[in-house]
Structure formats: C-alpha cells, structure tokens
Image 1 (cartoon, rainbow, N blue to C red):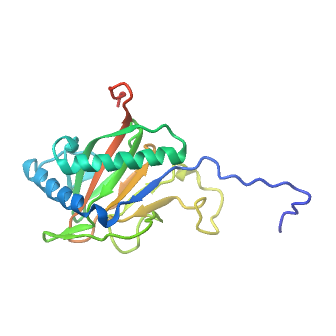
Image 2 (image 1 turned 90 degrees about the vertical axis):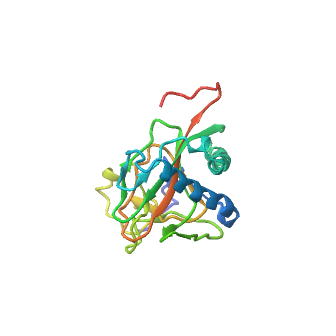
Image 3 (image 1 turned 60 degrees about the vertical axis):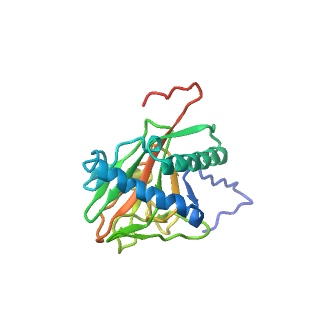
Length: 234
C-alpha cells in the first residue's frame, strides 16, 4: 500500500544521527607511516611489557608517544586538522587537542574487548600499515574514500575494528527487510594504511580476535578542549 500524499502529509526524519568521520591520508603519508612503524617497535623494545587496558593479549604502549617521537608529533598535527574538519562539518566547536597517543600491536588470537572513551571529547584510531609479516611491512594504500562496512567482519579475516549502534540492544521489535543505516547494528573496517577514523566517545567499539600469522598495528588517541591551558577532568 502506498500512502496517498494528497490526503496525508508525510515527514520521514533521520533523527539523532551518529557522526563518524573516515579520513584517507593515502600514500602521501607513507614516509610518516614508515617512521611510525619504526618508532612503535623501538618503543616496544624499550618497554616490552606495555600496559593492560582493553587489550586481550598483544601489546599496548604507554600513552603520550607524541612527546617522545617526532613521527607521533607529526601525526598529532594531522589528526587535529581532521578533528577540526569533523567539528566544522557536524556542527561542533573546533579547537580540540589530540593527546596521549598510544600504539597497539596485535597478533594471532589477540583482540580488544568492547569499550568506550566517554570521558574524552572525541576518540579515534589511525592505521600506519596493514600488517607486518616476518618483518615485512605490508602497506595497502587505497585512493579515494574509504568506508566502514556493515556487519562485524568480512566472513574470512580476523582483526576488524567494529563499532556498535548505541541503540543496539533496543532493535528487537521491527524485522529488518533490507540493509540500511536504520537496520544495521554494527559496522567494521580492516586496517588500511593511512586511514584515520574519528568516532563519538560514547560509541562502544572492539577489535575482534586475529586469526592470521601476522601483526597488526594501530594508533589510538583521545581529545579534549584546551582553551584555558588546562585539560578537563578525565
């Protein structure tokens, strides 16, 4: 049945959208990415134990790598430029400062438990390289736009980054008939060299267990406003 719009006025509104930004720095970021990988393994050698947060297995560096390595301070600048664009596009106040960058190195059977960063203003992840196999750096740059895909993995590979719909547990009464932003409960993306993802801090996200015999590297970070020279409480 089609609604007779001559008799009924119809308004269909996509209310309460979730703002997610995916920025592809592509191959132009290659030199920085190579330096990031080198510095991450240098830091891992200095502090092989790392810290334990959301990671199950794998290695999680201490935060604040932008204060220790030039490659991370260079990335910090690019991240903040993307955050300004994100805020301008979605109607938020800009001027966010990215801080406490940390690195993650994950191998077979490693994962990150579902978590959020709700005490920060914005959160994100950056991929300098697709993976490391027996010391070989596997870069997989893509041109143009990169998107998060529906579902939580590609039905083949482990290690995808997954974000969950904040109303996930409430989608129980309407039966989906097509895959749309209104019926999809989670989206995923695999590490892509030079790609940066910015998400609201309330979004629960995870990295599903790795299966392949290789290492995946990611860099995570958070943001605060810093108008008065002091960070807000975290």
